[in-house]
Amino acid sequence: MTNPTKAPEADELGTADTLAPTDGASAPVFRGLSPGKLMWRRFLRDRTGVVSAAIVLLFILIAVCAPLISMIYGKDPNTTYGQNTPDLLTDSGLPTGPNGGISPDFWFGLEPGLGRDVFMQLIYGIRTSLLIAFLTSLLTTVLGVAIGIAAGYLGGKTDYFIGRIIDILMSFPSQIFLIAIMPVVTGLLVANNEAQPTWLPFVAVTIVLSVLGWMGLARILRATALSLREREFIEAAKVTGASPLRIIFKELLPNLWTPILVQSTLTLPAFVTAEAGLSYLGVGVPEPTPDWGRMIALAADFLRTDVTFLLFPGLAMVLFVLAFNLLGDSVRDAFDPKTKR
Image (cartoon, rainbow, N blue to C red; front, side):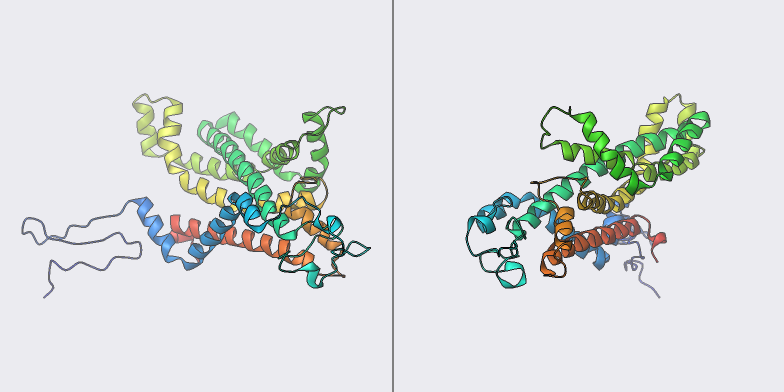
């Protein structure tokens, strides 16, 4: 004989927290959890996701606190220590010390040629990559949401026209197009007889990456909106006289937060690598702004001489991108456990 007051075991999703009788009745009463709490509980059970989130937050904290780290460390990313201090660089521009000049004064060594501190270049390079990636992710999310929902909800000729634009843009070879369009965007933003402002590379890279980055989210939201607009709650809203904007913001959008959040989480590390790739090829963020891609490009020239120069920016980028990709997978599984493999 079972005890009616005994709490049942929670299912995999944790939908039943407690069970207690009401008014002496033997029927169980379940206290459920909201979808947000269910998602959070599933995410906390994923150790890979929690560790990845901790690594991502650490990178963000380092980027935010870069000036404080520079003050405590006693060095900055732009001072040419190797050229200002004798015996730190050889005549060929290489650090005199072993392993790229690593020492108690220079934790990650010195940059070949200019002799800047690699540790501070790396720390401030995080700020550059994250700033551009976050801004690009925000713009692509706004564009993808607006265009995708508009195409899916309106349908007809609007859907056809937007769909063809997406197909055309997705057919472009993105890397070649990025390299070719960067000088054009830069030329449009500043006149030839004017000095290039420091903000221009950030704006140009963000614009170019955003133009070619919104289509994936738009296609996902378009397909979801096409299926949702035929549902009963949308038809009920139309019958009550709700305007299209009210239906989109009050009915459609709340049901699309899951793909929006998941897709945005997965695309941000792609923008980090894309920005680094542009800088590696010489069309991204120029000197003297610290950048991971340019650090890797410089280190490639000294790969046979000393691999240390490539080690730190390469490991930092791999660790951050891997952690963010794993975090995106964990967020997706937390929202929809059916997708978990």
